[in-house]
Image (cartoon, rainbow, N blue to C red; front, side):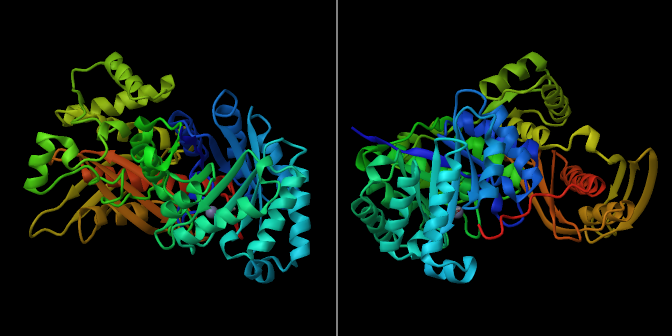
Length: 523
Ligand code: KIV
Ligand code: ZN
C-alpha cells in the first residue's frame, strides 16, 4: 500500500517572490484555475498583508477557485494578529481554507531579524495559531529556517503549536542548506521527539534549491513519514527557487513503488501548467530541465534515436504523453472554423469565456493565414497571450503602423505610429538592429520613464515559419517590474507587441497610482 503525498503548491506565493516576477490579478487567477485542473491539494494563493492588491488576489482566488469543490486555498501570515486577521478576511469566500502562519526558530533569525528571545517566539507561535483558529480549523504552522534551528527548541515550538491547534506543521529548509540525509534525520527527530505529532493531519516539508537539493531533500523528508510537500511549478521562487512540483510528482509517479508513495495530481496537465507559469512570469525554463525542459524528451544521438524508435523504453523512462506532451500536435489550419477551434481548446482542457474565445479565434485566424500548420503548442501560446493580455480598458498605447528597414549594408531603421488618448504620434529612429530601432522609436513616443530589464525570444516549434513568443520586462523609476508578451510568426511584430504591452501595464499602474504588491520583506 502506498502513502498519499499531499501537494501544496506555492507558485503564487513563494514562486511569485522570484526576483523580477510580478503577476497581475488575472494571471494569478488563471494560474490558480490551472492548478485546480492539475489536481493539487492546496493552493497557497498569496500573502494578503503584503498589499491591498495581494489581499484582493487571494480573495478572488478564494471566491472563484475555492468557491467549489477542489483544492484548499491557503494564505500566508506572519505570527502577527493583524496579518492573520487580513489573511482570514481574504480567505472568507473559500469553502476549504487554511491559514499558514510562520515564525523563525533559528538563533540567527531570532537574534538579527526578529530581535526576539526563544520564549517570545514560542509565545508568538502559540498565540498566532490560536488566533488563526478564529477564522478556520485548518491552520498550518511553519518554523522558518527550521534546518538551522536548535532541534530541541524546534520540537518544543512544534509541540506547543500543535497543542494550540495547528493541524499541519511545516519544516522549511528556508535557505536550502540541508543535505538529504540531514533533512531526513531532522524529520525523523521531529516524529520521535514531538509527543503530540500524531494529532496533526499533515507533517509538511518545504525545501529551497540553493544547492540544487530541494527535490532530493523533500523526498528524504517524505521517506521519513512527512505527508505533504510544498513546491512550485518550474521550481520558481526566491533565489534559486523551491522544490519543483513536476520533478517531485513525476519522480513519485515513475518510482512510486520504490518510494511507497503516490499523489493525486493529473499528470497530463503538467506541461500545460508549466507553460502557463513560464509565459505569465516570463521566467524561461532551461532546456535541459527535468520533465518540462524543451530537451527533456529529445534524443539527439543516432544510437538513442534508433533505440527509441525500436522501443521508447530504451531511453525514455516516462512516456511524454503522460505529462501532456502530445506527439507532433498537428491540429488546425486556415480552413478550420470557430467550432473546430472551440472543440480543440476544450479537448486541451481550456475553459474560456466567450470573449476570450473570440480573441483566441481572431489571433488563430491571423496566424493560420501566415502559417500552414497551427500546432497544439501554437494554440497554447495564443491562449496564454489572450489570458495575460492587458484588458482593453487598460490599454493606453495602441500600435497603428510600423515600417522597419533592415538588411546587409543598410542602417536598420523603424517608423512607428501609435495612438494614445485619441492622439496620433509618429517617430522614426535607427538602431543596431531592427528590434532595437523599433524600441528606440517607441521609447521616444511614450511618456513612461523606464528601462528595459529583460528581453527574450522563444521559437514555438521548429521551422522558419514558427511562432515567435517574446517576453519583455521593463522597470519603472521605483524599480517595479512590468512584463509584456507578444506572439507572432513575425519576430519584430511579436517584440513590438510585447514592449507595448509592458508599457501599457506600466502606464496603467502609474495613472491609477495602484501600489503593486510589495515583496514580503522578511518572508
Ligand atoms: O522558506 C520558508 O521558510 C517559507 C516559509 C514562509 C514557509 O517560505
Ligand atoms: Zn519558502
